[in-house]
Length: 199
Image 1 (cartoon, rainbow, N blue to C red):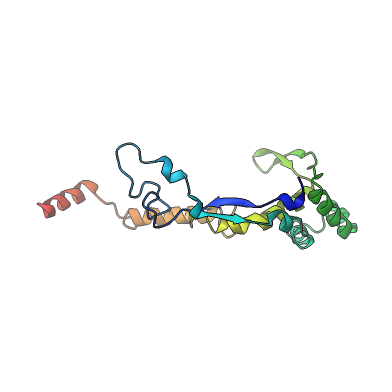
Image 2: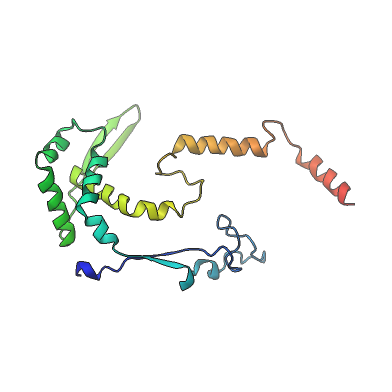
């Protein structure tokens, strides 16, 4: 496949005003019938009106500027490691070599290096070589902005400014909101009051 044959990727965008999709993208069951077929195939079929094409993603992935930024991200806080110093000795040529391998479709990742750490739990770690991590960062530089714009606020895995602690804090926020800030709520008494008010 020639490089100029790469046309781009298509991503579905849910229409906010489409009656089949509901008004709330966060809840798949909004405005759907409750007859057991809440998840209709129409929900998953995005029409061409809601498709967007991203062109030249491969060219932006292979650009030297992107590879250099990826190298900087991959080596952040690790500049004194031996494998990074080795890569930096001939940095420009190493990046151009990676670029050439990508453009000619001859790039192959190297075997993973496996080792065991005990801190305090024993874990088996499989680490990619530094040149492969540069490619990983280059790929993330290219596609992360596309996917970031589609994630809901409460997506916490592998995102900048998010993570486990932020997810736990958000969970705590919702627990306090539902439980009346720590005060127990009697659902039975609440439903009795509501039924009396309606009658």
